[in-house]
Length: 148
Image (tube, rainbow, N blue to C red; front, side, top):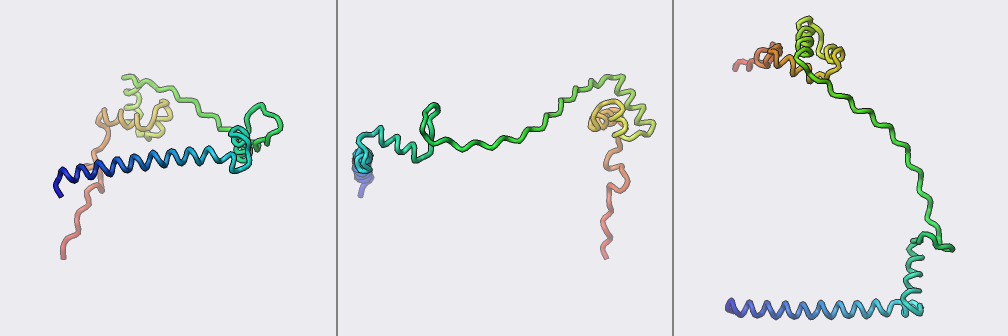
């Protein structure tokens, strides 16, 4: 079978599929139109009302219909904490933090005393060159055990 014959066969199959889809859509429409009569309803509106009632849906403002179950009350949410105002890191504040570091105060103590975060204290210490590098820290380099 040549390439051109294959394309022609494909086009025929597509046309046949399109016909089948159109027939299915028409059959579906016919079957849906018959549904109210099959279930004993005179018209489509009565059938839709019956379906709506069976599904339990209630239109607002309509009397005599089934009421929805009341929703359970939601638990109250905890109030959100107010956002903390950002402290401006001034050169004067940096100098005070450096003095506190030199006075051997802990980072947490300094942060609490000046109203800044612990990472801000660390950044100031690093900027001032008061932080030891990891390589120079004791115990940072562990020697490999000697081969036996």
